[in-house]
Amino acid sequence: MPNDASTLVRTLWHYCNILRDDGLSYPDYVEQLTYLLFLKMSDEQSDRPVPTEYSWSSFAGRDPDSMHRLYSSALTGLSAEDGMLGVIFRNARNKIRDPAKLRLLVRDLIGQTVWTGLSPDVKGDAYEGLLEKNARDTKSGAGQYFTPRPLIEAVVECVDPRPDEAVCDPACGTAGFLLAAYEHIRTRRPKPSAAQLRHLTTKALRGIELVEEVARLATMNLLLHGVSATTASELPIKCADSLRMSSPIKFDVVLTNPPFGVKGSVARGRERGAEDVSAEFATARPEFWAQTANKQLNFLQHVVTLLKRGGRAAVVVPDNVLFESGAAATIRRKLLETCRVHTLLRLPAGLFYAQGIKANVLFFDRSLTGSHQNGLLWVYDLRKGNKFSVKTRPLVNKDLEDFVRCYRQRTPKTTAGSVRLTDHQRWKPFKVSDLLRSPSCCLDLAWGELKPPSGLGGVSGLDEIASLIQADLQHALRHISLFAGEGV
Image (cartoon, rainbow, N blue to C red; front, side, top):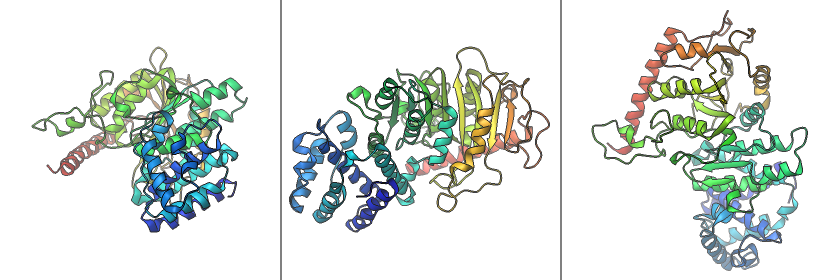
């Protein structure tokens, strides 16, 4: 078996093409590989976490039919376990119908390598390569859980998580943000101490994922990169609904790309009647500024509650969060009033596997004390002149180098009275006080293609009116979709 990540990915994916004949989808294949890799690595360790009757050795050396039967039985038994085993194997079942193909995976692929002998970089990068290939299969829908790696790395570099800090992603998908934070801390200068590395691998990273199958992939992804857990409280990934209740634990850093939409939010169960149908899907938490069925707005509020005082956050949000009226306007105002909202990265369409999405990254800090109404919101527009496609023109690290450089040049205490204007075409400051004077606190900020503003930016009346009209239209369309989806 090859010992570099790219060759390993090609080898693992070659077997996927063989198994497609057995009816396995890309996600099914990655899931079965996850089970087998975990069992094989457990078998290679002296303190094996897997019970003997369900171990790799219990089925690996058998004839195809016996192997198929015992492997299926092992997955059934392991699905009832707690802790790390519970996260990896919850509701696990054997989806490989042909015993000969299972034997091919066990004997000729997984069984040919001492996986614990490979470095975490090789194992982890190979597994993440599989997840990325899986995300490219648009038919499976797996791409919705995958954020482009160059974007993740740029965001993490800007937020700069440090040793001894705790990092959370409340909608972690396959753990891309958590892994980037882990690598950033592990390789920073000066190098973390032994105690800091122990904290990093057992306590620093926490992710929540609603979808069971994806939580499994995230757990395995972290495990292969060297993030471990010896107790239930140290499990890096929890399969749960982040929005259901407030977290008693607060974090220094929150990095997340939450899901978009309405369904899947915590619902207030009620009969549908004359009331607004979207209220059926609204999240009701007393610490939230506004009640809404909009999942990304609820995640934005949730992130604020997760932060320690002085904590830092970066959240991927779609355009409607920046301009929508109603609850969105209330949340934007409260965010500007209570947090230091300092940077907005505007992203073009074509970066994500879901078609047509225009997203942004909003950076803010939770205030220790006082107000930041005299501060600035710096906006970087990556949209002008850029067209991306996940297949033909994917985002690369170089595309974000200028943004990272601009981000580093702003200072925490920069105010509207002290800023020196620049002629940079993509990077402009806006007064927070101007944004708060706008009735809707619109953050859908843009400027001319060629002419830089002569002063600090603001929100023009016509732009705001257009944004409000667009918000109302999107609100109406969402209700139409909701009725259509429920068969009303």
